[in-house]
Image (cartoon, rainbow over all chains, first blue to last red):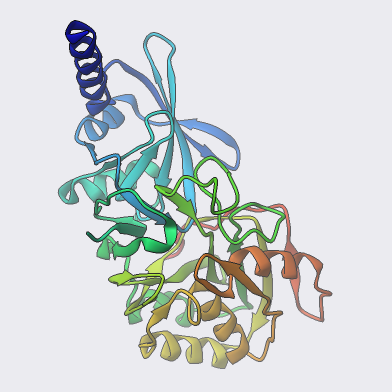
Length: 118
Length: 225
């Protein structure tokens, strides 16, 4: 029984770790625009997404709309993102978890997702 | 122990478990998207017809639902409280190829039982919408809008002065009275994007008005001066 509990805890920890770097093995980062899914620059996407900080699963947000995005990994796995129009954070639907872009990278992120203020 | 919800974007807060009504709403936007008095300058420094669209991003497009979540669930019993989406109403101004878009948000924090906070006007370019209504205004009215937003110090209130109230108020200032239907949500009610969007879809147009019910993204900020 103790071994089973240990294994469950280990799997939980490992899966939690896996979610922390969503840019690992990223193959395509796309944002949904009126014309369809638009692929973003891969190098730029990896650079910024690896800086995204996962938040507690108990973080709550009240949204005023969002942009749809998705990440496709090298193994074909896809995760869906809801991106705040402020550009400061996004929600990964499959993980039910928010990730925050560090303040110092906000402008770079807003440029990537196309909402940079003039 | 307090519970926290961040509205619209910005830095995060954490919470314990609990119902929507128990939650404390906290807001901390990225202030680099706040607009100032210079935001509309280029529109004033040119000539041509001035178009004023009101954009509505409904929680569930084509319905009067006042809130949903990232999974499009509806109803307070089933929504994912981590990702509540109440939609948004915002304003655009276009003239001679120049475009500006902005909306009203809470600046600091709101709670269901104390749902008021300082307000802030944010650049809403590229924000998606489901329905919009456009009218034409005069250069004098544009100057009036610039003064209005420059002096706009009203508090944000989730029930009585939210993003939809701000947008309807601005249209009223331009002598366009749009329908104002009250919707309901846990522990509150008021003007809201769900009802406003449906009201716009069904309202008859008068001279100079046009409607877009297909939706899309609000334009980028175009034109410099």
